[in-house]
Image (tube, rainbow, N blue to C red; front, side, top):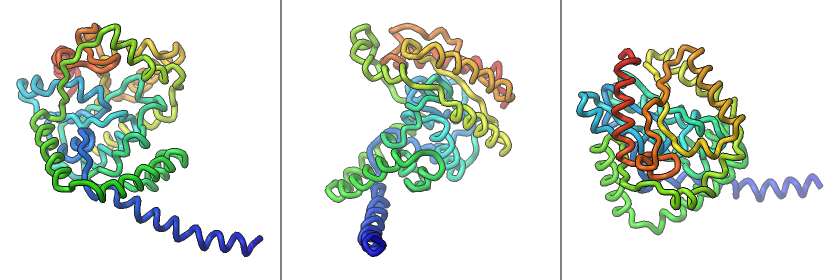
Length: 314
């Protein structure tokens, strides 16, 4: 039996080593993705005033031209499904490469922030495309579990092989064009779509997963600890909400209550919080059940800027 186990190990170890080497090649070339492009271009822009960090709610909901018109230099470092764990690797990476620190870093909170739906490493492996990429193994060690790791490993290996078949020049050219567009828009993503009941009905299966999602107190603790970590580095940190419209329809009463308590804890820990009181709460202002269109973003950003002026010391 011992000899059999030894032979198995001798056979398996070279395979594991080969897979480990192959997975490291998954980011030899960029992928033409807006979240990846934002992480690359954000330090190049290095806004002097406001850096907004959050999920897609942010890059769909903060209309940067309004901030420009108020003389505020800003950028939206938005990554799909970003929650507290994504925030840490994004902010750490940004601070290591930016030309200057912003006066304020705004971190988004929403009912999704402390759910198991956000910080989706397997679907959005942003850690492999940072300015200083992190390995799948490091993500396993710090943030996630073997289930996620196996999915990440599989995806990395597939990407490594797929990259061999790509037109690399076209990929790089397309990525640079995407970066240029996002630099000009300061990370904002435009949308003229308008939500309707029929569209909402089609989207319901996507959002039903929130009905069974539990509020993750570990993530809530991590978020508060993370903000404190940056405040200890003399970085002005502010938590803020954006309108999420019909997302509330998919949350249990227990989840809603836990989210309210989370906001109370944020304030109790002396973290500045700008709650959403914009009144942006109508189909005309949204493109999906919980994402604003450009019309909604303009209305919300005007309200947010007013609240920042009233509440935030720069």
